[in-house]
Length: 231
DNA sequence: CGGGTTTGACCGGCGC
DNA sequence: GCGCCGGTCAAACCCG
Image (cartoon, rainbow, N blue to C red; front, side):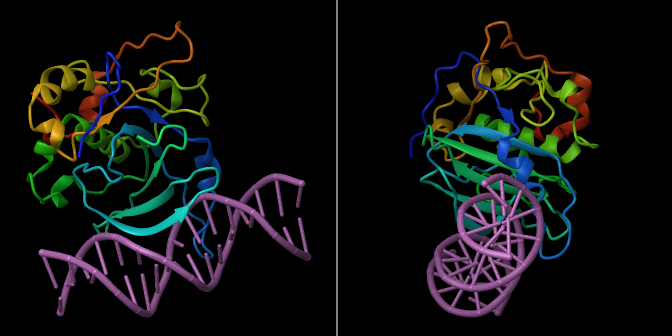
C-alpha cells in the first residue's frame, strides 16, 4: 500500500457538488420521496477506495456507472439511527483519485469508530482521514445545509453556483494545510497507513481565485467537535 | 452466530 | 410510452 502525494503546495480537502448529485437526489426509494440531504463530495488521492473517516460504514450496494470503468460503491452508516450515506467511486479521469460523496447528517459523533487505531482523535491526526473526518463533521453539523456563499473558501472547481459546486472554508488554526505541514506528512508510518490518503484540492480554474484557505473559526467551532480537532 | 460484503433484481426518475 | 440509468433491496455468502 502506497499513498501518493499530489504536488499541491497546500493539500486540502476538496468539496464539490458533482453534477450527478442534482439528479441523484431526486431518486426516490421504493415509493417514498427522499428528503434532500446536504451533500459533499471529496476527491482523495488514494489507492484504496474506502477511506477510514472515523465512522463505521456498511456497504449496501455497488453499481457500475456509465462513462466510468470503475464501479461505484454505496455505504450507509452502521449506526441504525443515523441516515448518513456515502458513495465512493474512482475518477475516470484519474484512477488514483477516489471521489467520496457524503449525504446526510450524522446524528452521533465518531463513537462508532472503535477499530484498530482506536478513536476519532487518532483518525483526526491522520491527515488524510482528518480531512474526511472534517468533512464528515461538516456534513453532520452544518444545518441547515450550507449555503454556497458561506462555503466558498477553498479553491473553486467551478464558478459559484448553488448546484454545481460546494466548498467550504477551512479553519485558521486547524486547516488541513497545517495538518499536512505539521502532522501527517512528516510522520513516518502515517504515510503507510491505509488512512493516510491525501485528500486534495483541485486548482482553481482561474488564477484570480486565491488558493488561500480562510476558515471561519466560529464556523469550525460549530461544525467540528473537539474530538477531531488538533491542538 | 452476528455483522459485513457481494451481487442480481427491482424500482423510480428522467430524457427522448 | 419506452428505455436508460442511478439508487436500493435482499438473499446468499464470507469471515472472525
